[in-house]
Image (cartoon, rainbow, N blue to C red; front, side, top):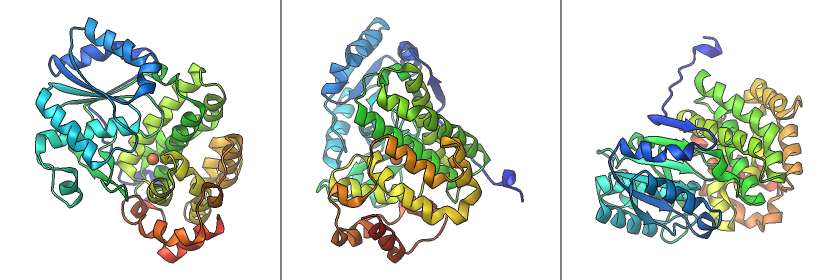
Length: 376
Ligand SMILES: [Fe+2]
């Protein structure tokens, strides 16, 4: 079988709307489900950016009955999901709109399915299946990173703040992903960089995953190319709309790729690194990514060579990726983030399962410990 004969499945939201100023279409999408919307969003930055006023105005003039559910924090935990779920149940909305970064979109996604299925996050971590569809859900991203607007999982932190783990179901794929790049114009530089790297790495790990296929490869290749052209531009000039438009596509393509092809070892390691050392998700993926690519290289040589070409015209994917990190002022030494040799065994043991299963080649815990020691 040639490479184009590989099995490839494409799951996506029922409706994906992309484009600058498409936020004006939100009321029309709400009306497909009813009149009453619970609008879930984050904290201060959403109001300060002007996005909150703008979107509430659009909903009001579209005759949508809005219940605001604000104050969602970064890295939502079990308790926050429980309280938002209770709020949603009391509102009885026809549709939930999650507007924000990955944390907000995931919280609203989790609440929308638990509200209809009952129970708590921990029940589903332990294997309880979701048997009923979620409350209709519209995801509106205000960052270009996680791709949560199209994926079927929600990353939730344990109530003791010791681990992060996904709950997942096909029922959790949003009904509508409404992606308006102009909403990301207000993002600060470091958030642009960290979320942009997450988006790029999701394309990259999905492209080389052991579950990659021709449909997702097409999207991932374009996502990698766009990130190579526009990530530094968006980082240096947060008001560059063209760069923002491109990065929103990188996020979308990365989300669809990870939903259908899975990720890899860098994502597996990013959760324990992020939670133990307080690093944003995209940054914790990026600091281990060059080492992971180096380790995987021989298994996906042709694809990694192509990654180099797509990113910067380089013949070597690792070199091109490292060059990009340099331009983004990001170190890949674990020591620069307070990580010490004695922390490594814990990071590795907490990285098991999930994304690591999709890494293109097998890697024992001992091998991963050795890899991390090399980048201390
Ligand atoms: Fe990610």
